[in-house]
Amino acid sequence: MIFTPLVFLVLGTIFLQLTSASNCSPAFIGKPVLHGAKIIDVQAEEVHNHSAISLGPGTNDGGRYTISFCHVTVTHTHPGWNDTINTQVWLPLSGWNGRFQALGGGGYSTGFGSLYLTYAASKGFASASVDGGIAVGTEAIPTDLSWALSSKGNVNWFLLEDYASKATNDMAVIGKQVTESYYQTAPSYSYFSGCSGGGRQGLIMAQNYPDAFDGIVASSPAIHLETFIPAGFWPEQLMNQYGVFPSPCEVEAFTAAAVKRCDRMDGVEDGIISSPRLCTVQAHDFVGQNYTCNGTQETLSTADARVIQAAWSGTGKHGWFGLNKDASLSSSSIPTTCRANGTCYSTGSELFGSWISYLVAKDPDFVLEDMNNSDFFDGLRYSTSQYAPMLAGANPDLSGFKANSGKMIAWHGLADEVIPPRGSEQYYEEVLEKDNEAHEFFRFFEAPGVGHCYGGLGPVPNDALTQLMEWVEKDVSPDTLVATKGSNDTARDLCPYPLEQKFIGGDPRNATSFTCANKP
Ligand SMILES: *[C@@H]1O[C@H](CO)[C@@H](O)[C@H](O)[C@H]1NC(C)=O
Ligand SMILES: *[C@@H]1O[C@H](CO)[C@@H](O)[C@H](O)[C@H]1NC(C)=O
Ligand SMILES: *[C@@H]1O[C@H](CO)[C@@H](O)[C@H](O)[C@H]1NC(C)=O
Ligand SMILES: *[C@@H]1O[C@H](CO)[C@@H](O)[C@H](O)[C@H]1NC(C)=O
Ligand SMILES: *[C@@H]1O[C@H](CO)[C@@H](O)[C@H](O)[C@H]1NC(C)=O
Ligand SMILES: *[C@@H]1O[C@H](CO)[C@@H](O)[C@H](O)[C@H]1NC(C)=O
Ligand SMILES: *[C@@H]1O[C@H](CO)[C@@H](O)[C@H](O)[C@H]1NC(C)=O
Ligand SMILES: *[C@@H]1O[C@H](CO)[C@@H](O)[C@H](O)[C@H]1NC(C)=O
Image (cartoon, rainbow, N blue to C red; front, side, top):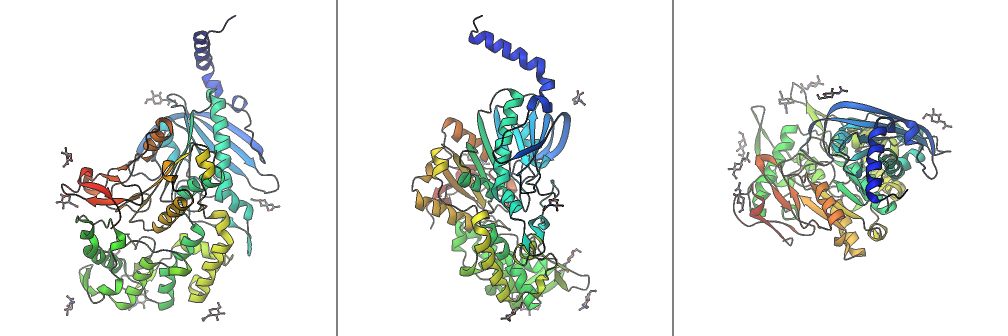
């Protein structure tokens, strides 16, 4: 019998139709092959009408999605490491778009499960998320780092390596095989998408596992987390040392004062500081100004200005950059709350504080308030030297990724209140220094007014993945990154770094009212 392509196609279609239900079984999926791993278990079952609030990493246009899919869970260990890692692969029962998409996590988590998977699968992707062997919640941003110690004083290096990059690559290898087993066709393209910790996962994949993905979106990446995380504790350190706790209203009053001074420097008054470098005001400039908090008039104080300035300047040459002045500091950088009698206290930043307890002091009971400033800076230096090689995600050599024809889009909100955008800028500059044509496969965009992953006044690049796919699959490079759904219905075409947005007149809500220009 001669199999003409047509006969083959017809037979193939019938085959798929006849077997689609039983394709979703452990026997049909089989055990993926992963170098260095022992597959412990494969589970597979069809799930119908799963409904959840979901979104793409680094977007603000999520919603409720209902999907039906083959839910595969692969459990594996690295023999000798005593770890147990679960990879979920969600395979749409109908409407597969032929592509695989792995999703990152955030905070001290490598994956957020349904929060990202539901949306990705609803768009037709065979989608994957991995728990990294870290048994913590999957739906919220986990700040729990207790998994990082084997015992008091001893880091669990194996889990840390899983978290750093290994489990993310495992997810790619497993996810692609499971996708091919189920659909009997290999995915035509493989993507990674992540924000924050997930953005760092994206960068480190391009650096360490350059053939894992054809395209990567790295949003608000937690680059150099071993440094920016303990450094992010600096305002809290000063609050503890001085015993001074600015109220959220006062913190917001400092931010409002800085925005008022700097807003117009980019040519348009919209509450957004698009050129942070021009905004050189200091917190001390505003001391003595009055503000109103809960109907009571108060005055911005010198003591509190020191704490605010710490968030804006960062730890300087011994550590890390600060946040920009339109970032909302009261949510994470200066976490305080006030009692009915008006006195305020620190509520503590779990994200920053737990790093110091678990990975610097290596003591879950460490009393952060007892650190003096020299302890703090010693800890910061220790963290950088001890953990950067494994965790930073900052190797500027992307030659492997380039050779593999990989494409990467990174972006960072300039009003990020958790991760200073200067870290991403510095990395992109280092990449260009190594390869002055890196622009051909890796572009970095800054999003004025956008907070961490989303939020803030500025429009968010919700379609970054679509633009990445155009680049990977059709060679249409993103000259600008389209951003929408900011406050007041704003749109912007974000500029590839080092260019930045310049107002050229018109309605500031309209993207055409801006152009990309060299930094002033
Ligand atoms: C899923 O939802 C559709 C539309 O509401 C419905 O027709 C179908 O019966 C549901 N399937 C299951 C298995 O509940
Ligand atoms: C392996 O991990 C389990 C739980 O994760 C723990 O209870 C056990 O003590 C570990 N075994 C060794 C040999 O470290
Ligand atoms: C702040 O308020 C005080 C008391 O009401 C007043 O004396 C002072 O002039 C005000 N300062 C400024 C800068 O408006
Ligand atoms: C202002 O009022 C709100 C709501 O009543 C309260 O949560 C907040 O702590 C108050 N702020 C200060 C500085 O007292
Ligand atoms: C405010 O309340 C706290 C907790 O009840 C108390 O410790 C503090 O002394 C009070 N401060 C003032 C100025 O009343
Ligand atoms: C800081 O505290 C440590 C103990 O935690 C102590 O050894 C050191 O002398 C202190 N340094 C300063 C400058 O006070
Ligand atoms: C929305 O934009 C219009 C036109 O630029 C402006 O007049 C208005 O103040 C803006 N509103 C907010 C809340 O930013
Ligand atoms: C935005 O600019 C385009 C092109 O100049 C124009 O057609 C459109 O009406 C503008 N939209 C708004 C909301 O101003």
